[in-house]
Length: 281
Image (tube, rainbow, N blue to C red; front, top):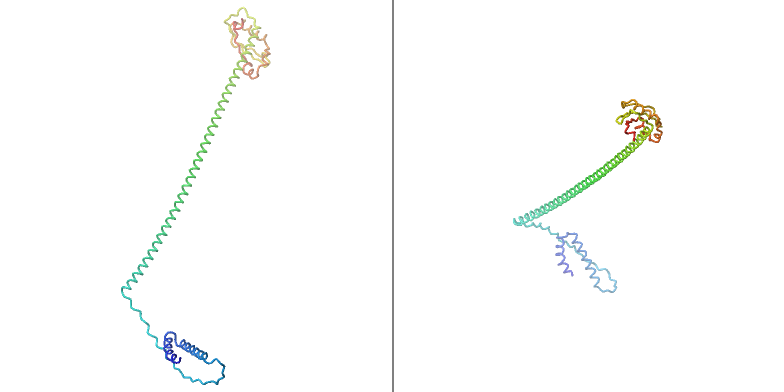
């Protein structure tokens, strides 16, 4: 073991000192010594014997100096081809990176353009929808206006029809009223003539072609208020006979049953034309 230690330790120490330093080599040596001591004691007789201490001879071992650090190994100089290949690889990587960045930028630009196109499309659709709603609202207003005009036209036509019917009814009423008034006028005028003829004494000088036009003023009760000769017959005796007949026939009490409106319009003053042929049957 001592031979192995004397032969192996210096070589091991030299190797260890080259890589790890003197301190690590010393620590290793001490561990080996302790291991050897333990091994020797283990192999000795296991019986407990008290022996006197044995003097140990020790010798100073001079450790070898650490070898000088070998010079740094220079890296071999790259060849021009390797250098060119590396530069080309860098250029390719840079170009690839640039191309990828360009592609990414183009994709981003396309995406932005697509988003912009979508936004424009949505905006256009909104405008179209707003225009459609506006047109629908305009059509609805036109339809409402058309319906309003139709209602207004129908209302006007209805009013015109009602006015026309009212005018027709008024005209009919007026015609009926006029017919009634004319009938009443003729009726009471004939009554006055009839009563007058009953009290008229025809004078001997009267002739059939004689005409006397007399105006009579009457009261609503039929009293004769005034008699005026409007046009003489040319025969005084005939004219006096007519006036006397009117006075004898009055009052014309039948006029009390006549409407006041008709009386005021036609009988407050009434004009008669007397002919002998009209009064004599």
